[in-house]
Amino acid sequence: MRRTPPWWRDAVAIACWVSALVVLLLWVSGRGLQLLGSGPADLLISVGRLTGLVAADLLLVQVFLMARVPIIERSYGQDELARRHRLVGFYSFNLLLAHIVLITVGYTLRDHSDLLRETWTIVTAYGGMLLAVAATIALTAVAVTSVRVARKALRYESWHLLHLYAYVGVGLSIPHEIWTGQDFSTSRLAQVYWWSAYALAAGAIAFYRVGLPIWRTLRHGITVSSVVRESQDVVTVHLAGRGLHRLPVQAGQFFVFRFLDGPGWSRGNPYSLSAPPRHHRLQITAKDAGDSSRRLAGLRPGTKVLIEGPYGRLTGERRIGRRLAMLACGIGITPLRALLEDLPYSPGDAVLVYRARSSPDLVFREELEQLARDRGTTVHYVLGRRITDRKSWLPQEAAQWEDAAALEALVPHLSAYDVFVCGPDPWMDAISAAALEAGLPASQLHQERFSW
Ligand SMILES: Cc1cc2nc3c(=O)[nH]c(=O)nc-3n(C[C@H](O)[C@H](O)[C@H](O)COP(=O)(O)OP(=O)(O)OC[C@H]3O[C@@H](n4cnc5c(N)ncnc54)[C@H](O)[C@@H]3O)c2cc1C
Image (tube, rainbow, N blue to C red; front, side, top):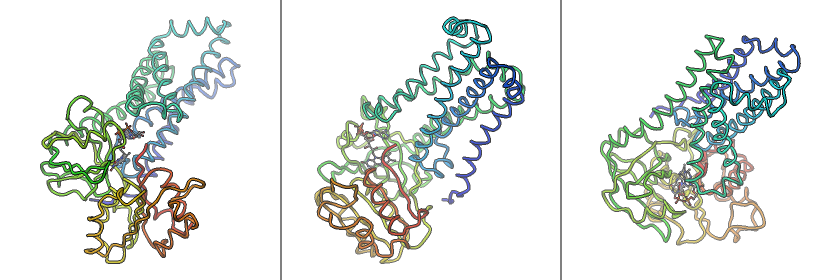
């Protein structure tokens, strides 16, 4: 597979800024600047227009970032995209609130009315405003449930379902922009820009999030071939399908899977491939973390599988040098084991540090020892309960060690390695910090988070 050019990241960021700049210029050309000097009412209305336009633009950027456009997805990775999506959402929602307040107060001043009466007039007398109110309610529900505390209190599926209201919000706000938005109705250029932006965002979602997954699912006809228990709470699901060599997937990537095994099948869960993809088979290995992952153990051979993906950038594409260090914790071993099997390296050039609570919690032990024998991979198991009185990647048994020193002891000359990290978030943060402290350049640190 062709390497994703690194400049794509910058190109995407520049495109987002350019879109905001275009919106600003359209506002200027719609007398936005002149109106700033025409008294307090016009000033508030004009700034209110600008905040509304930028909020709408950022909302579309948000939708586009989550459209899973492959080149964007591979440039940033799903976890970083989700973080940026949240950040853009924060600004977009606050600008939306500013838009509502500024326009309402501005119109109140202009009409010498009172705030309540003016609010009522705006909502009932202007075209598309009732829909805009519904859009605001939908977007507020999404914003409130995305605040960390609220999100933690909700089941993932409930949160995700609520999150889909953002699309409803975007859709419902369009009539208000067309019918009452001064910029939209007076400028041909603005119409071309906004219709193109809406078409691009809707097209990307329809194609990449709906069309492509359906097409790939039908083309490859993936089914479960067997389920093997790896440990008390971990199973491997072996999958078979037609022409899987035509799937543009690499070791280290993941799919969102839906297993057609009865009620609840519509919940999609992301799992990394736990072995390199082969012509007719794929495999995933999952830990029992809740309802959906628990069901995997009971899957019957022949169960049909819907796939979305492949996604993820924890692949050999990101490798810069010759040596590889894989740092895994718990079920984070899955993509790293696939990479260790798949990537080329000479004996002695690859090290695996595998952290688990106890020996029975280790999965793929046989396969890893086979790798050590056949390919000269160095494997270190780091076992024990976690340290509770400081943030550390080490177990209690090694509490006397400094984090960076312990890592260097296991992987001497760490800074000469490409380091791939996967595991629970706090552990990843601790070991990544230790690796950087040990002198690893940030460009050689490659991570995939199992949480968005
Ligand atoms: C990129 C990626 C790759 C992953 N690879 C693996 C893997 O190889 N093996 C493995 O065991 N686990 C993997 N996971 C984690 C796995 O997706 C979750 O454990 C699983 O979805 C939990 O679902 P549940 O219904 O069993 O548990 P729940 O109780 O519903 O969820 C437990 C936690 O998992 C997270 N989660 C649930 N559903 C989703 C979802 N659809 N998308 C993202 N996060 C979700 C939530 O943060 C939740 O707090 C991966 C996650 C990501 C994001």
